Length: 293
Image (cartoon, rainbow, N blue to C red):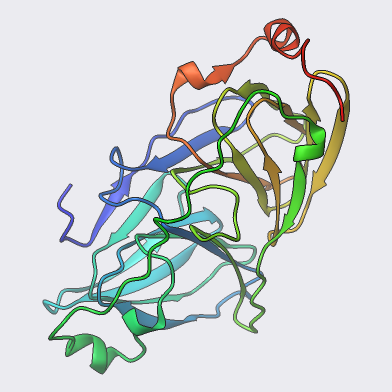
């Protein structure tokens, strides 16, 4: 793709009668590593979010649920309105693109992935400033000194936990965020999400050898059943400002979806089939030496 051009990106849509799945990762879909992910929710219908632009930061915007419009203007003067209403489409915004989000439908959730962690020095808060951005680029915060936690298969349910995410409440919609800082257990490499899920579906049914996950109910609610080979525990997720951390080596199943649910997963690895253990008997064999704490 042309990394300097404002454009719609078609994401993979893996159709399944138990609910569809789409994902986004570098370099397959986007031309940058994901440093920050945040999502906007609880937006009253018809409201708008304040416009902004960044000197260096690039973004993709996805409608996880519902619909909204993005009004974008690039430094070259190109201006267009994009209506986002499909979870398998993303809008790519290069740096120096002014954008506003408006016309939200009820129960919309907007996911925004960024090429940098948040840095106020990189932001242009008015459209006039965005049009006049020149000179030295702003310092861009990164988190390269935050190595991924060394995952191993000898984890137990004691390693799993609910993580309370930042919740920035605003009358035009709340916002929660995960980014590559020391506050979180791993660096983001991939985001995927389940949508159009029938209420009686069950998803998951696997563990990972290396991959770690943060699972969020971006919309609606569902249960996550975790199994470390010795015991099982069920977590109910129903708040977009909470995430369930699942290390490698824990079997997980997802069920009891409410209508309109969107299950989002932020992961430490890009997709690799060799990272999956999909057979429960094999999983039990692997965990025979794992002792409960």
